[in-house]
Length: 378
Image (spheres, rainbow, N blue to C red):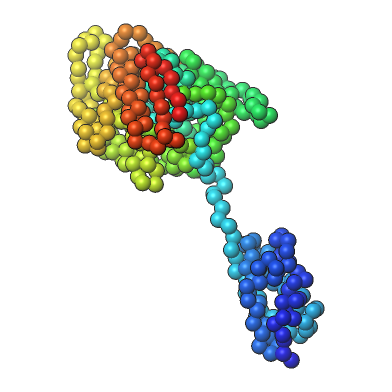
């Protein structure tokens, strides 16, 4: 008995790959047929990688050949899977957020250097200058922004936007805020793996009614990990601000933070470094400076890395007090702290202006200065 190749192909035209519609030959699933006497070898390619799909395809081929060609044919089926690549289920894909002109990540290589404090006061200073500002508290495992704005007991409301339900950010001092802290109890630890944290961020970013914002500040967790990668994949960051104290341990980690943003695969412009806790000034001796964490450390690091030192923020008791009671120190008027935070904010905006010059027109962030910075346009 000799099997004919065309007879085999005609038989395979009577069946299809499960879930793929057209018959096996027309769809191109059958890639080769070889016959040797009463033996036939059929090579096929399917898209479904499951064992069930493979077994069903094999059985269907054997049944068709036995029914249409010869019931005693010796059939061997080789199956190759060509499944399309799928992104991890909780991966966040980068795309612009409608209405948001600039997205600034505030990062630190090390915890405890005051990153959230800098974020809060940068937001307040921008709002005082006339900008529309929002904060995304992306520090999933240690959210502190709600406490710093005295909204830890608030819950985001649900609003309908273009027929879809969205989260309405909580507002404080004219700043829109979303944080995982709004969805957990004060004494509840967030014990999540990376994909779960990324999914929560995805919802706070894209399922929120942010409205029109000149700046969205993203308060990142310390270090360089899953959350950081999720954020840089999630949205087009305009730039990053890195926070450090003057001490060597913090500077070493801050250097890694800058390097992360400057990687070719990430390529987020670093606007500069903020040296927090630059010196200690006691309330009763406002002119005195005590360099308890070292002197000029972040300043030297900024120079070495070729980025700008945006500001040196002193360690003053009222900064801590303001954060604890939900009244950021930048809200004060005519104080050393208010001046320091204003300097930091103006320098950050200036770096964004410089960034315009090196970007293509379609991507440039155009900043117009009006009474100390009043409008941002993309």
